[in-house]
Image 1 (tube, helix red, strand yellow):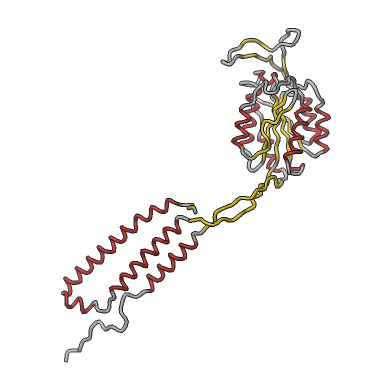
Image 2 (cartoon, rainbow, N blue to C red):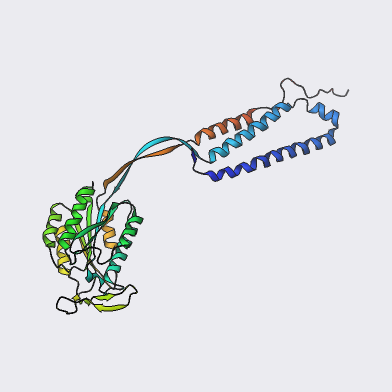
Length: 346
């Protein structure tokens, strides 16, 4: 048994206050009547009043109030099983974790900015399921499809460069890994499936165009978000305290400069019917994707059975009304009793 509004029990403190008020009122009225009429005359005048009925009316009133307070607490008992269905879109976020995402042409760096934009996207979801795939040379499911947005954001925050032991950037593997996740974990139709790729677009291996064509054949739309600048930036190497130690170098000892590859990302979006967005002034117009999510077909992506306590406030409310109605209708006077008789003066 439970109560939706247990704070209503505080109204029970008014019951003794009402009883004291009724007692005081009755005492004052009786005292004033006796002063006005005298004890014998007052007794004669009040012969028609039934004391037991008056007490019964008070009891009915108090019981009615008690049940009324109980109804206000909204009691629940007894269980009922309901099937809850959730309509929405299944979204897979593929996040680039290669070392090029440490470039600081977007502040504080590309990876941190990508995380910030993903957080903004999650905060705008309503009923959709989201998953996070981290990738570099290989892909890894960091968070499976879920509606627990808090858990998704926590797992997203733990992602860093080096989380994937295979270095490099393989956009084709990112798309294939995302599609495998949808194939295994999604019950939504392809019109309710979406992949959003956050990366600087520098593909070092794999065939992202081929993977995009596979996604298109399955009617899975892919939005690409380019993080970085076309002019590019060198990749700093910092210690745990954030102090600069060196810059990323290739096998020949040359400092590596990484640039945003818009062409590849635009091709992926075009092939799959998605859209390509890039950072402008350090931010991404993520609202464009949010607006498109709102117009996408919603599928029945989740169904579960839940047991709920039944609302039972009607029972005490009905009892309260019965007692209060009886309180109103019960007369205080005795039947067949004449108060007094008089004769006209001759």
